[in-house]
Image (cartoon, rainbow, N blue to C red; front, side, top):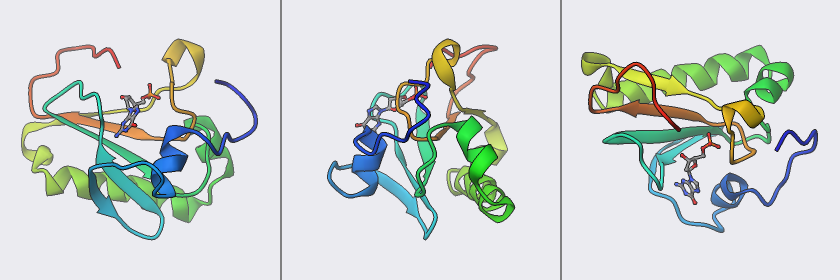
Length: 122
Ligand code: DGP
């Protein structure tokens, strides 16, 4: 973790290349969303940009404004697809050692489907 260089063998890169399966729920030219394999909530979706960004830090630094806005609007669309805007949800992105990011391809967790409490361990 915390490498400056993108590891093109990370699990999400393999999913994006179709080398590993995923339960896909949404795809467009720039974004893929799929269910987390180890869900922490009844709804636990991962949204990833298709371009190679290591982390939130890397994404915000390198992506165009258009790409950043498109990504976050897509996250919102997915919350509506699952009616989460009615009951609420949590967005989480982990970064670095203290944030305990495990997969070094930027991703947003969408968590919902139950009362999550003040904190969540991801
Ligand atoms: P993070 O700690 O933010 O890097 O979270 C990585 C998430 O990825 C974690 O919630 C579990 C999930 N995950 C790990 N391996 C796989 C996989 O092979 N498929 C899917 N769908 N999710 C995975």
